Amino acid sequence: MSSTSQKHKDFVAEPMGEKTVMALAGIGEVLGKRLEEKGFDKAYVVLGQFLVLKKDEELFRDWLKDTCGANVKQQGDCYGCLKEWCDAFL
Image 1 (cartoon, helix red, strand yellow):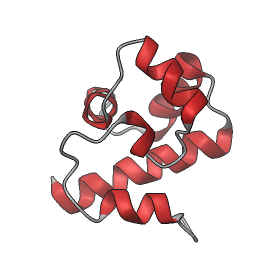
Image 2 (cartoon, one colour):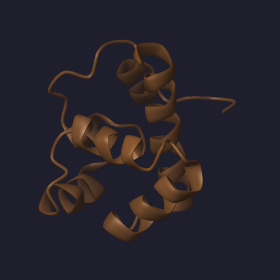
Image 3 (tube, helix red, strand yellow):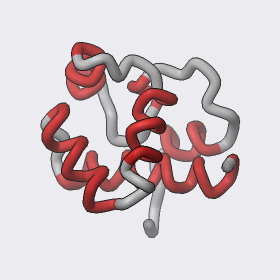
């Protein structure tokens, strides 16, 4: 990933704790609400799905698209954010 957003940098800079799903890069208010409606209200719940999918980029992107309608850029931003967070904290 050549450039990352401030939101991405802020997320990967510290432990996840109780951050909302909208703290994830690529997930704004609309996608965040869709995820919350399906039970993915916290960033750590999305992280759980990311790990269940074995950090596989294609599977995670497909899941995000199917679950909340994320576009290609949003999928990539969210994947990159979680992957970098895992690399730093797991």
